[in-house]
Amino acid sequence: MNDEQRNVMASGRGFIAALDQSGGSTPKALKLYGIEEDAYEGDEQMFDLMHQMRARLISAPSFTGDKIIATILFEQTMDRTIDGEESAAFLWKRKHIVPFVKVDQGLADAENGVQLMKPMTKLDSLLERAVAKGIFGTKMRSFIAEPNHDGIKAIVDQQFEYADTIAAAGLMPIIEPEVSIKSPDKPKADALLVSALNTKLDELPAERQVMLKLTLPDDDDLYTPLIDHPRVLRVVALSGGYSLAESCTILARNHGLIASFSRALTEGLTAAQSDSEFDEKLSANIAEIYAASAT
Image (cartoon, rainbow, N blue to C red; front, side):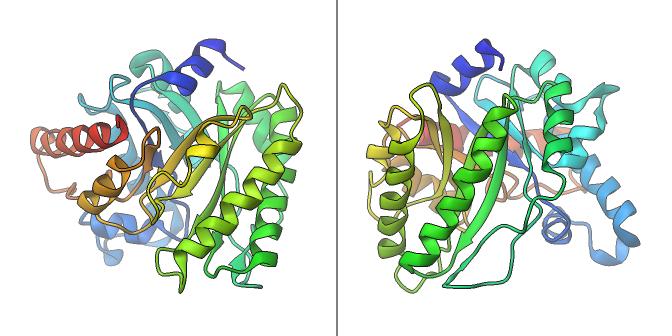
C-alpha cells in the first residue's frame, strides 16, 4: 500500500468523488446528464457514453487533489484510459487523487429488512488487477431498509469477512452498509448499525484499519465514536438521494465526517453544456461539498 496515499486518506482535507455507478444505476445517471435511453443501444454503447462522462469529469480543470482526495471508480473505468493514460495512473499522477475501485457484484434479494451483497465470484482476480494498476482501496455496498437487528448484524459480518480478503491483498477496504433515507425508523437503523460496526472494529487486529462509508445520520455527530476508533482510517458519508444542498447542510453539522457523494456531486451537469459551463458548475458543486466536509 502506498504510504503517501495512505497519508492523504488519513488526514487530507477534502472529500471523495464516487464515480462508480454500475449497470443498474447507469441509465439513471446518463438521464440526469441529459442522455435519454433511446440515445444508445445495448450495454456496450451505454458504458461507452458513461465513460465519456466520467472522463470529462475527471479531466475537468476543477477536478483536482486540492479539494478531492480520492475517487471511487467502476471496474470498467479502472480498465479504461483517460487522455491516453490508465484511469488510476491518470488520477494519481496528474491530479494527485487516490484511486479506489468498486468490487461488489450488486445486491441480493431482501431478507430481514436488508440486502446483503451477492457472492463476489471474481473478487480475487479483480483485486490482483487493482493492485497491478496502482489502486489504493476498494468499496463494496450493502443496503439496510429497516432497523432489523439480525439483518444489520448479517450485513456487517459479511462486509468485514470480505474486508479481510481485501486487506490480505494489500488494499484498503471501504465498508458501505447504506441505510435507506426512507427507512421507517432511520435513527434506530443508524444506531443499530453503529453498535454492530463498533463490535466488529474492536475485533480487528491491532495493525488493521478499514474505512467506513455511511448514510448521513439523523442525529448529529452520531459517527464520532467511529471516526475516533483506532481501527478506522476515515469515515465518509454518502448522499443517499438527498439533494446537493440538503446533503451539504447535514454533512456540515457532522464534525470530522467527509463526503463521498455521487449524484450530489454531478447535480446540474449535462452533456449539452460547453466545457467551460460544465467546469463552472462542477467547480461550484466541488466547492460546496468541500466546505461541508471541512467542518
